Length: 132
Ligand SMILES: Nc1ncnc2c1ncn2[C@@H]1O[C@H](COP(=O)(O)OP(=O)(O)OP(=O)(O)O)[C@@H](O)[C@H]1O
Image (tube, rainbow, N blue to C red; front, side, top):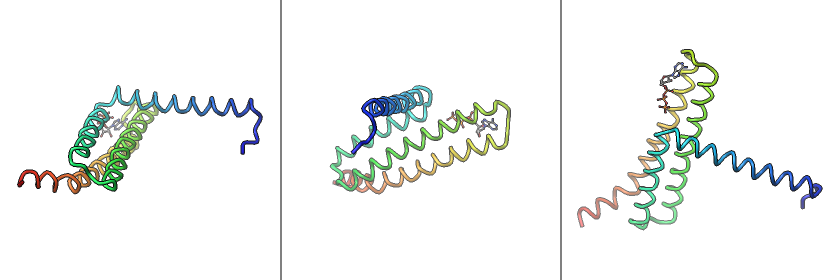
């Protein structure tokens, strides 16, 4: 049970709504500026379509949703790191390079994981259709 005054609770609710608004506008600005993110979103829609087309199981849906969500989160965090690095320096700096390349490495690692998951779930089904 909340013990705060109605006024304080109202302010808390507004702050919470504002944080959602900021988070959603962050996602939207990243989609507008980052081509890779748009590619991932398109691929995600394709995978969701394949999921329905092949009637994957409930557990497989959970894994697919986790992988797609994780991939998009990794892309957003990478974008945020790129922005902070660009804000910190416009000069060449080995630490700036490391920060960007490590963040890009994290995205690559998740992308490889996603591809492996996609292969395990979808390739046997595609092969069984091809071989009747
Ligand atoms: N300030 C910097 N100092 C040193 N290296 C940098 C700096 N900024 C970027 N780099 C390096 O230059 C290369 C290109 O970086 P850049 O941010 O232009 O594009 P990117 O990493 O391909 O990202 P994206 O194309 O997704 O925006 C990367 O290896 C990055 O680490």
